[in-house]
Image (tube, rainbow, N blue to C red; front, top):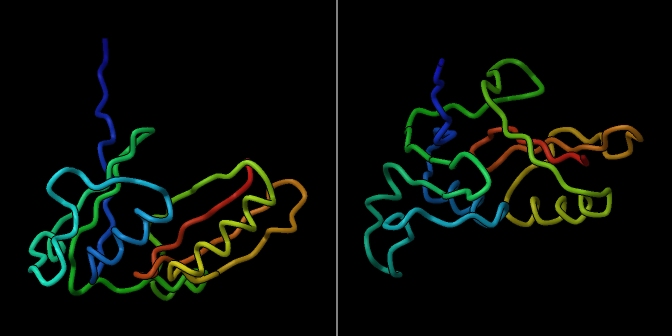
Length: 138
């Protein structure tokens, strides 16, 4: 019998590990791995300048790796390719519209809007580090 590796984490490089982790924590309702939570106000955030993990009970974890030389993807312009993107789903067009407001309030940027497509409404955003991600109705 053949065995296969299991995806444990999807890792995003970023110039701001804590900031990007907080964006996705709030957007997706995830929780920090024990020990990765933000420190109390005024305390140094050593983990936030290195490696953080958000747990996802329904699938692979999201991890954030501090990379001071990370270059923001320019998608849909291919000057700096996206290299990876996350697909997320909601159950209705009304939910898609509600999530749009949340994404913008959290610091995401709209990159492509196909929300009026009758077959597969979707929007593509850039997170605060420029990584594209999609929200579509499924």
